[in-house]
Image 1 (cartoon, helix red, strand yellow):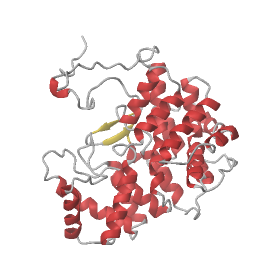
Image 2 (image 1 turned 45 degrees about the horizontal axis):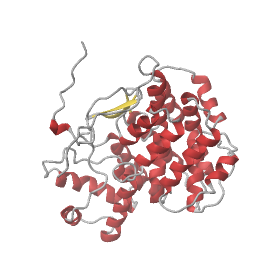
Image 3 (image 1 turned 120 degrees about the vertical axis):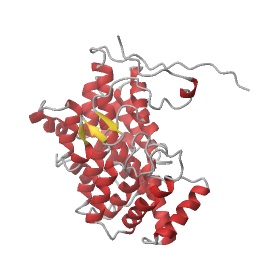
Image 4 (image 1 turned 135 degrees about the horizontal axis):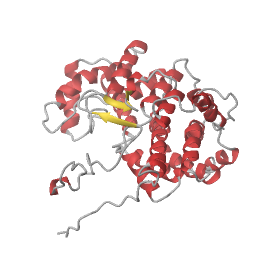
Length: 383
């Protein structure tokens, strides 16, 4: 007899399906107190590993499956074609670059997709650094993206291709690697993953499913929150300097809340502790960039905001999430472009979502795959 998890009542309706189990996720999960885990391992314990090795863990789980050929496979498929680059560079540059990114994924599938979820998953994982570098370079007007010639490591390729106008600091590669690893996956029910899998359930291909997932990620309640958090930090530094007193900052935060504005980077749907990804980045920032104004402001907010939010009984998690500090660390390391933070998030998250799509289309239900997503809605008369 199957376990009855809970009964659905009227109070559960119109709540965004929050907390309802509807399937299995084989890559990761979020524990309210331990934080994000990849294949059962706490993500902050993996943050300094090589990205290729962490992706291998998500793709295969524990064990040395194809370990010797894995990196060769990624490197052999790392370049997007000149035709794909040309197609991306023919698009308009109006609007937020996440729109361009979503369109670029569709173009990649039209030109280079093979129509097999597993093979296209591998292609997406291998090619996504080149694709995102092309989108950013084009959208920012930084010039043509060069051909990939080094065949280096996963994020080394991205660094090589990104045409930053002010050069690249020695520490930026490590920060980008850490950021990339921390954002690969986040359980099966986050909005972008759920949307991508729902679209794939209609047998849309990998690229169309990921394009839809990135449209979901682009909103301020999801992936754009890291950009909004950073811009809030910049606003506070501009308004008060980098080291105001705790009382001054507290007054500003309270006024912002009274005006109905959000304090970005705090709170979480699942966690009931400080996000361990944030904790790791706070430690990294204190060690490497303790005097950077944005880092100083982020550290001060870490002290001030939870105490204020705890006063509201409706707030279940008053603690920082990864968005509270990730942007400050990236800027301190030399990536001073808030507009492109959601793309860095999307570049990483396509890894986990694509692997989850492979499971739902090719492995779930003894290989039959999950059926098309079709939840029931109850009719309610308006007025």
